Length: 386
Ligand SMILES: Cc1cc2nc3c(=O)[nH]c(=O)nc-3n(C[C@H](O)[C@H](O)[C@H](O)COP(=O)(O)OP(=O)(O)OC[C@H]3O[C@@H](n4cnc5c(N)ncnc54)[C@H](O)[C@@H]3O)c2cc1C
Image (cartoon, rainbow, N blue to C red; front, side, top):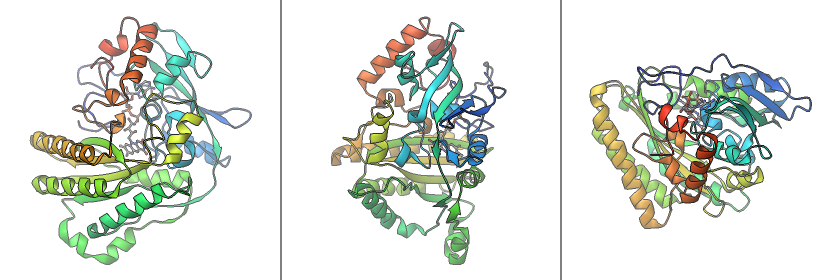
């Protein structure tokens, strides 16, 4: 649960105490092809290095909003980028995964070669092999208007309305990417909220570049503390999202006295254009359809200091999620999808992809990994067999 250099928060996902860790850090290289439309990224690279290289050519790619993140976790699990409204998810933009299979054989997977494995990798996590290279579509990208704006908590319901209005507008812009958070930090408390000028000083909206925006996000990351993420997805509906924020606020009251607590309730949109782009690029395994959309991912991020508080905090998060899902179901706005990278161990993102996709993934696993090495040998992360 403690975060070191890796960035997945779920226990045992990226390394296991007393187990074997496969460190890909020496598989480096960020190479553009002759036409500059595909970038090949070694599995040990981080997004910051990719953005730096592409920035020199006026290009970019769908990657993490934080430059410090690794490539594999996002490109194998979905992945939201600054440009997802216009370009689709991170996994949708991978045109070829180079994979080491359980047999030791190195294969390319793309729309033409090993196409069944290719589709399963677009969301299936570490269930099928070790990816050593990610070939991704690039696009032209100049400076854009972006940054963070800080508001007082009373304004959050208004923010929800604005977010939903933007998502359901028939002419919603593909160029917009918004993420809104309700944020509580124990060490800041009331005095922080009372100081209006400080809020203004925190704002960072400006013309910026992908490189600088990703550096800004990386600087906001918390390291060296206990941490958990949980998530669910609902339709873009103001009443559902406001009810969810209320459930979160009530639960917060029970844990906010714990040492080092920082909690955030974050809404990340999956606009219609994002869902449509998924099929434009050949589809993934996540079972997200434009027919359901637009959608909003509800993400609860939790950081705290002491192991003795784990149980209470995790129980609260589980109950909050159950209450939000229950309420959304009653309103007819629930969606099964859980984003694997923001799920905790008591969640089941693989099953949230739906029965047909799970069956397809099991068949792929049987075909490319008949002895189930990546089910029984590499036990970390969310497994097909669970
Ligand atoms: C500060 C911060 C910012 C974030 N921003 C975003 C964001 O903008 N968008 C978003 O969608 N998510 C974001 N996330 C969540 C992020 O997607 C996950 O944390 C993701 O797992 C990170 O990928 P990684 O490769 O660094 O992780 P790791 O912890 O190294 O790996 C995660 C999982 O992927 C598997 N894996 C990794 N590489 C490979 C490979 N080459 N082959 C096979 N399996 C592999 C590992 O086995 C592990 O199970 C953020 C997280 C943090 C902490």
